[in-house]
Amino acid sequence: MTTSDLGRQPSEPTGNMAKPQIGHPVGGHPVGDSFFDRPFPRPALYAAGALIGFSILFAGIAAQTGLGKEEVVVESEIVRSQTLTFADREDGAVIVATADGDILKVVQGDASGFIRGVLRSLARARAAQGHGPEKPFTLTLWADGHLALDDHATGQRTYLNGFGPTNYQAFQSLIIPGEAKK
Image 1 (cartoon, one colour):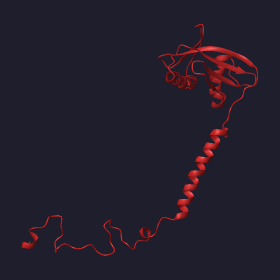
Image 2 (image 1 turned 135 degrees about the vertical axis):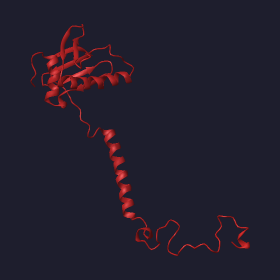
Image 3 (image 1 turned 60 degrees about the horizontal axis):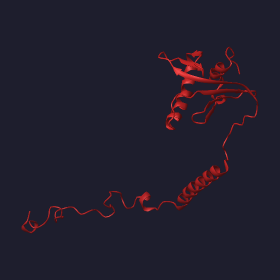
Image 4 (image 1 turned 120 degrees about the horizontal axis):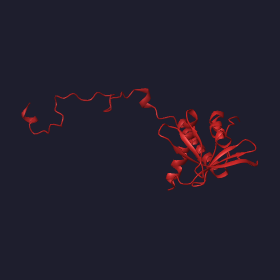
């Protein structure tokens, strides 16, 4: 170190330090690199902006007009309707009872898993709206074969036809004892 270096701060370069090479900026990428020399392609930016804009536009149109929304319209007569309560048993079975408290059926095995899943979903909706398990559900079978579970506490209706024939039969057997065919 020379006497002229004594007054410098440690961060200041001395005459002995290597200077940055021309063509290598501070970031470490060579200036002549083809990726860093070219701007981002404007057509790609325009296409991305158009895609985002059309997506928002079509989502708004669909929300306002109901485009793409499927609704099940049941216009047939009710064949049978049953007001039911459900309770879990420690062994995993589901106890199905009438609104009067008479045990209609004890569902075990695979069928209890689907029934439990539907009821868990409805119980979450009840809890979110501040309702408890006191109110019963109504299971309804229409002449055209539609089967629905109504939760009068929340106003939610779950159509059970779309879950496949095995799951449909799990609930159908509750409304038509002894019959498990669609």
